[in-house]
Amino acid sequence: MIDAYYRNGQLFLAELLKRKDDDKYFGMDEVEEILKDLAIDDNFIKQNLREPAKEFIGEITIGDKTSERDILKAFKGKGFPISSRSYNAGITPTFFKTSKGECSYCGNKDEVLNHVSYIFPFFRKIDSITPDNNKLKLCKKCAFTLYSGMAYLYQKGAELLFFFDSYNFKSLKKINHFFKKEADLLDPSNKNRIRKFDRYPTYHPYDTIFIIFFEFVKRLHQKNLLPELEEVSNEVRLLMSYGSGQIYHYYVLEGNLINKLTRFFRTLMEKGKEFKSEQNNIPMEDLILSRFFLNLRINKGKFEEDTRLRNLFVEYIIKNEKINFEIINEIIMGRIKDKTKPHVPPYYKTFITTFLEVFGLSEEKDMFERLNGLGYSLGNRMKGTNLESYIWEVFRARGAEELYNVLVELQLKLKDSMDLRPLKEHEDEWRKVKAIIVNGMANALYGGGKSE
Image (tube, rainbow, N blue to C red; front, side, top):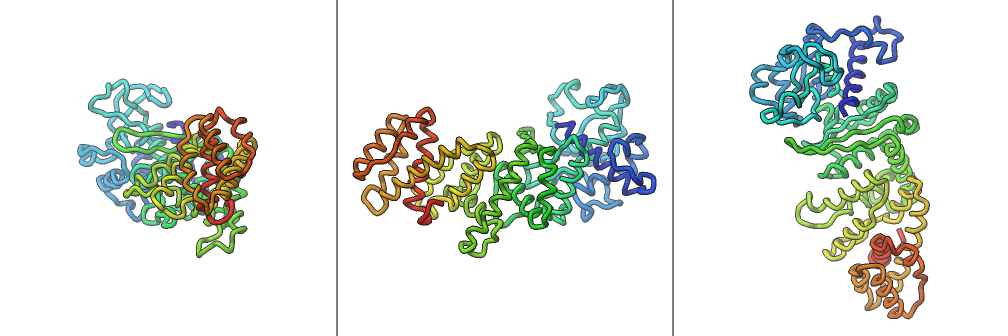
């Protein structure tokens, strides 16, 4: 993670140099070329100390004459742990209070300084109990380059931090330009903090990053910039961190996933046009995702708990690039139990089939369509009869054999015959099989009157 953050610092410093002396760097586009002769000495640090902070926090808060104490207060407001001793000393001593040693990053033996939270915020050590040899020691060049990485560090809420990375500086520059300048995602009064999306309230980290990326794709789509994003998406990854205090979790969304999510969201937005008559004042780009996503919750009385399963569902998508049908099943049955309408998230089938198509899961798609079709047909036959509650018998089945027997019994009660061979073909995945069938039944019984 530190290499990726360092590259963002290099990108910012190269852009800073070009902005300050365009004549000197005219015609230079390569970051390495621009930084080749840069000496990050005491004078350079003093002159440019506020520049990364302006980009991270915003020039409304940080100006050329803002005191270092106020900058540190702003850093603390961003979730960086700042000691009271640091407040009194300011930022400058961090870079100038050095001793002889070896840089933990580049390995050079030189004057090194102690790491602090705003240099590389993803290194969490408790200073009072961490041995000195386990603490980061950095030379001035590496420390200030890492410090400059905050220019492309983004924040949502108090606990979610993320940034992009690419070994190709041109791709890294483009993705950050799109994110900061073109997508209008940032709070203008708080620079790198993501603005509030009224249509998509979130609490947990994975459903939050999912919605942030959807909004990013949607806004570029509206500006006809999506083809350019898709060109670089395979070369770019997103690194996220969430937590508080000393307990932090990290995850990397690799370029392949970024590319697939981009195409998935684009396809959902385009499919929204097929349901134009169902808009109800919802923009077509948002129609499918908003109605599906916002109903992936159970009423537990507290938003954090209401959306816990939704976050697990999205986390599974991000980490496995697959659908967890059991989590959706738990949500649907919870909504039926609590009489929360709509019981089945609208566009359930559209969301699932689109995902499986874009992610290249053809066998999974075939399995889903067969089992969902079976469940939907059973639900249709149950609807309006005294067997509607039998959905709970299927839901409570444990093991492949019991599931098969319950469905056979249901067929007898319905005086109907259906092809149950898909159960036998996938009996080793009986939990998934049951979830897909029950979701299909629920969609027929309680959905919008069609297989969506």
